[in-house]
Image 1 (cartoon, rainbow, N blue to C red):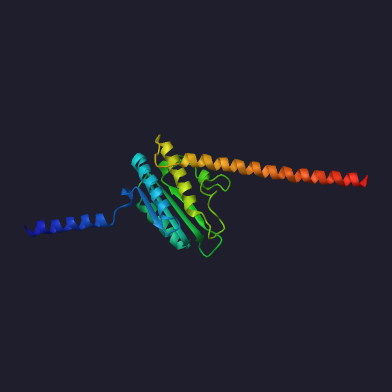
Image 2: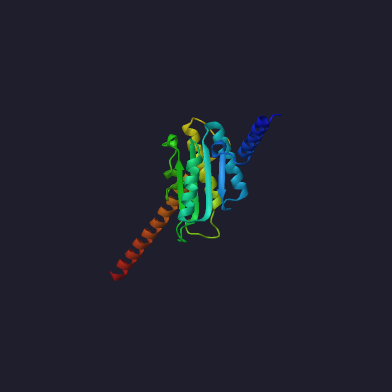
Length: 215
């Protein structure tokens, strides 16, 4: 073998090895990075949903969960992914605490332009009806149901994206989960109205008894 062919072969092997060791983000179905805020079983289910979503729509999803992020770290993660990812993609970055503020976290989602309007972030993160926010405990505690919140929110996100492509995900349960949460919310408000009614009724009864005594 000539020296030229040997050098060409060596270059090919080197490039091939780099591709295997450092795969580009664009070739991935689902990407997870972060601390263990999500338990292994939940993460496996999220990966299953993410892989099916990619297979049926070509949308890459990235989930980054951190216990703490400084502003510099957040920007580094954000810019790194946005530079490497190829459309269509969704990047979700969450941190329990942000900068030096113990009571403030960060929860942001970025997507490629071709996914604009294909899912509703408010239905995920709204304080009142968000499928993710309703389960997450904003005030940090040992009972923080982070895994359940991420599974619920991610399944909802994946279902919305799949629906925009006229696809259905067999591995997900976002629609059922959303319906269940809506039922719980209705029951909560009905219970609240019931207790308000009892309180008002009690006040009127006490007021009536006071008037009778004065007469």
